[in-house]
Image (cartoon, rainbow, N blue to C red; front, side, top):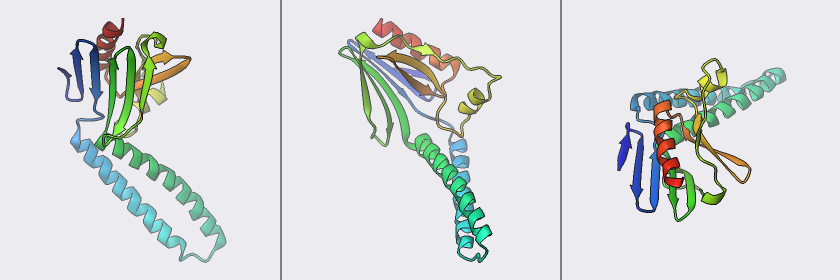
Length: 179
């Protein structure tokens, strides 16, 4: 087994390669994300309780709009926290089939791709001047895939928030295996 940093492990055997990518190794940031989630939840609950005490119709409409935005960001933060705490990405190639799974607590749909229909892995280049690329690599969001391949006209992205070096190592290992 080859370990890359604290997040990535690669296992190579005769007719199998397996890559496991953990979302984070930074427990301090994970705790801060949890505190942010709790503070956001409490603030939303306070606003929700105040809704029932209002008599003015315009103020109630304002709070409904406010709470809809609050609910969206509550969902986003919760989704990110659950991914960072319990998630992992798995990529393995066995018997001519490439398997990819984003799992949370050992549950998740496995996507299978015939190797004959799969292009080689490519690195998604980040542009530091592009705001979306900068935000996607932030700890506080879920996403920021760094590798991609094409299969039957569909672009499949994987390797969330990998560094350039980590992405290159995975790319070289998997591409060498699938040739």
